[in-house]
Amino acid sequence: MNEEKGMSLIVKTVTRWLKGFIFLFGAYIVIYGHLSPGGGFPGGVVFAATFILITLAFGREYALRKMGKILASELDSLGAILFLLIALLGIYYGGTFFLNFIEKRYPTVNFKLFSAGTIPLCQISIGIKVGASLFMVFIILAVIRVVFENGKGKLITTEKKDKK
Amino acid sequence: MEIIIGILLVFMIIGSIISLETKDLLSAIIAIVPVGYFCGIIFLLLGAPDIAITQMVVEVLSLIILIRATIRRDLTTIEEERDFFGLVTTFAFIFVFFIFSMEALKHLPSFGTPSFTLNNNAPSNRYLLNGLKETGAANIVSAIILDYRGYDTLGEATILFTAILGALAILRIYARKRSKNE
Amino acid sequence: MIYYLCFVIFLIGLYGVCCKKNIVKIILGLWIMEYSVNLFLILLGYRKNGIAPILREGDNIVEFAQKAVDPLPQAMVLTSIVIGLGVLALMVTVAIRLYQRYGTFDITEMRKLKG
Image: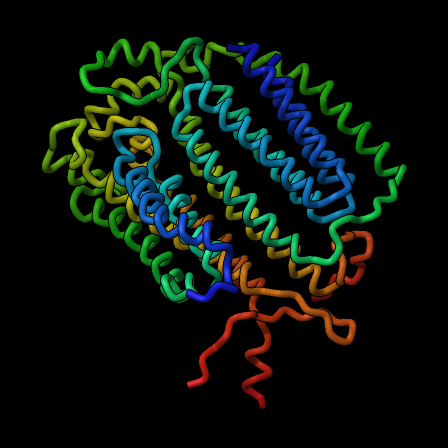
């Protein structure tokens, strides 16, 4: 790990230890959304915060190797499509858009992790969507730089592309 | 309880005035952060833990996005010449707006008795009584946003998608067109 | 009384949007207005000595419905806060584009509106 990119050694070491726990905390907020406060939206923002922390501490190239721009954009669309799919399956099984069809056909015990039907599945898809899109916006803002040449401004990207 | 919320609101007012009046851009952005934190504490005191978690996390990310946009620039202070006519007009308008709002806010139910306690047919009563039985979720707010009002959540997911798409489209680099011609 | 203080925050944000010349201050004014609107919606739903609308095991449901705060504005504000973050990102990208085109953040110097 080269030393001139990113931040100092203390920040890098602490981030290396903490990034798993922060990701786990985000996953906990998303999955237990139907039993305790939270849900898909704050959990997704915590997911994005994990990757933003990695970007700030280690530099852009390392973070882009972990989750590239194309993967973030695909995950964003995947989350939205999953959400819509669960809603459309409600029509197929019950006749109403967004019907909680798992709860109506296989009712479960309350206050457990596997309860409330489609609600945890929707939370997970929203969490993926929000996390990926906020990380994508941050990466785009981070690689863009404005330089002025001949009095006119230009936007350039500071990514290094590998010449194959 | 009202006194504590009132004190925190006064802190928010002071913080937002400082943020708008200071000359240095970095100080302005940093001064907006305690406004958000006090807002999150007020949400917690009002019995809304979901919203408090969301507000705190969004506050941190908004600070990162705002700083990312403004600190790598050469100019962080701008000389402000007051446009006198515009200032007087805005203050007059704000004053008139405030006077009318004092009359309008009197007609709201008083703080502490929300409107669903005065009316037995309000939907909130039905959500609170039948939420666990009909959806199986213990968190009534999650049950509302994903079961009773799920269509609204679909709309909000679409808005988020479109906003991020717009941000990406604006920052497109035109250098690709030039490199294709060479 | 508390509604008035919340409305004063909204008016401060409005002053920031109308009277400031730096585009970053305009964005901060919009963000302050966003805080005040979300806060106002949650203030409308507060019940005196109320508890959060989350059930625990072994709770009596009728008693819970007598004591809980209003869950409906909370559901609406939850998504509104995250959408506000997306809109903030959009506004910041517009500010960067304007800086690239005109070289300054001062809105009185941005006269030519063609892109």
